[in-house]
Length: 347
Image (cartoon, rainbow, N blue to C red; front, side, top):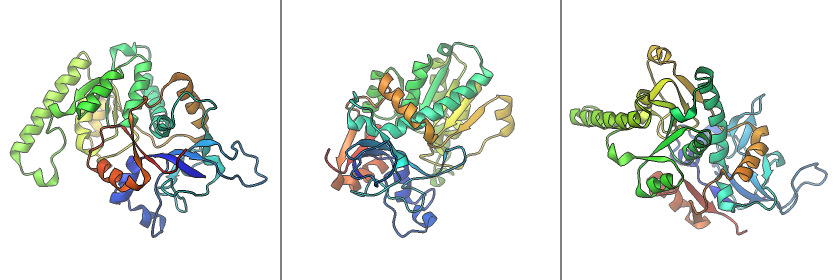
């Protein structure tokens, strides 16, 4: 197959920074070719195989390396799974079970489809988080409850599902472009710039008493916003794909019987909380990774039928020779879009 357009993901940034793991060392390989989500074209299918794809088909690459017995991912393709080659190679071979054909005569563009990884991940995480919330809040109207998101494209996709389910939805954003984008899509934007010291102090700042006081002010101001958006109750379901720097704020913002849900850890994996306080508040913690491989066709079909897909024109696409620039822009927060892409081969 040959890649057409790939999606730049947080796991690629993690691989380049060799944190939280060094994928080369983990795989026992000197070099790793990244890129595990994107649209590809089938060039040749091994003779004699009974498969659902044909030469010339456009397909989505499913990022599954090693599966567990229930067909969830244990290792990710072109990340921590040894022997897998990603979409930053201009041609490669792979197991046909990892290819999912695009719908015939799809109404959507290839850049819109190339963002599917954020949507498939959001689908799985939302189903689990919402299901857990309903085990404790069985019949109350979602319109009485707030779903809030930290993060990027996955959180955005998840909030669009929450909005469809009838919840109030709000999301933090740190630029005029993203604030406007959220508002255009029916999500209440919470301008992160209003709370400049919301994140935990860095190691170098820990002895700075003024920095701690500024953080207390930012946290209090942020929680006031949450209180106003939720009629004083707090967040019913909070999508936190950031991690350590905001985790204590996440827990403080949660309503009783609230759910904190995550499928990413952009800024830190190691978390701590008071178990007794979380138990007394009946907070449920949901952690998911990727999705279940057999669920893929159903998610794809829902996206096509319902238009739950990256909005037209919301992506930004870098040519293949600008991938190093894309990596640097992503790492330094210079990309306004939630859906950064790279184009490998022409359509």
